[in-house]
Image 1 (cartoon, rainbow over the protein chains, first blue to last red):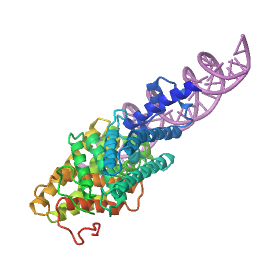
Image 2 (cartoon, each protein chain N blue to C red):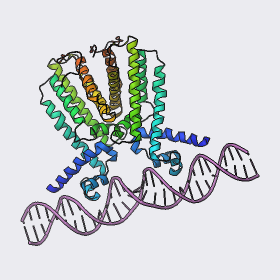
Image 3 (cartoon, rainbow over the protein chains, first blue to last red):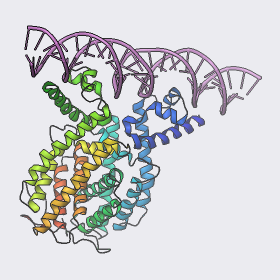
Image 4 (cartoon, protein in one colour):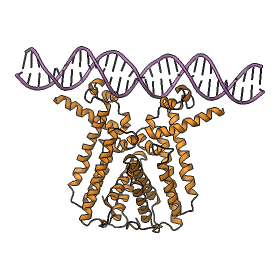
Length: 209
Length: 209
DNA sequence: ACATAGACCGAACGGTCGTACTATTCTCCC
DNA sequence: GGGAGAATAGTACGACCGTTCGGTCTATGT
């Protein structure tokens, strides 16, 4: 029972990498088996169906995201510093070398948005949880006095997500060398609009919203 | 030579719809032929290769985008009003009934970002052109005195793109009923940060429309 | 030492994929 | 209205898809 779980884990690890590169539709059992030098049937036996394999891959991605982004960021001190930690970890995740094709949730989001099923449901729920985590973090920043009292924290979460989507677009598709700088500027503007104390010089932005 | 072009156009029209729903990888010749009640070979003869078909579909999408978004918006008076027109037409495009699966460029962007080839190249160039159009429009708004003189117009274009990406994410994947309102709020904040004069009600934002 | 359970393989299934060919039908010009 | 050429159909191909099945190893527990 031990050897099996070991290879199973190896399969999922490689499957996640592959899925980021070729998408979840392109994640094929034959290709996986070839890469890992297993027989298709031997590999297949670990999951029972392709749908189940996709779900396990998504679960692995979630676990990794929590480990690499959420948990470390929550270790930062409450307030705007935690928001910054969240943002920085998130950007690092988007370009993590272990995810050569970018964030699997971004890929899944556009690929599955019109294909109902458990995979789509899982992605939607994950995003919902993540948005809530961001909003809650913003709320503690309000409590700490870092953000303006009237801040709409759900809107803040939405705006932050948009910024990161823009980052993925600019860096992955467009290969824009300025992607990182652009994204950081947008983030600083968002913080400023949320009422955060100015850290460095940034564009004269909107106070309150 | 007339009848052929007719059906060819019909094929492309349906192919574009299909591609938005199932992605460019899922856009299959057999499926297309079935839907249009043609034989695979009859359909295939129009394009010669699948790659060419994909390119023609992308070209059609570009033409439509120019017709439905760019050209009408450029008819608006120079300045911030033209920026608003661009934004509104763009949002309408994202949810256009003739694109049931959302913007084909969004789909292509995440699907092709790691698969080099002419299709990817075409998408990248289209996005570059579009970003430049936005930046130029912002520049005229600066000239008109609607935006602050020091505005970084490329950054403005990047930020606007992010906002629309966030809109697609929230409305298509999350089916968030507040997606539209969130997006308009983000847009108003962007305009405000760019130095646009407050519209009717200044701070609460999201008035308009 | 041996029984047993789990890991893995090889072959094969029915389908669908993109792409070749060769026919047949249609359209339009003279 | 017949003949040229374009448009479409038909059929076949090799490759790959997810899945099933029977069997052979190998490791573990007793």
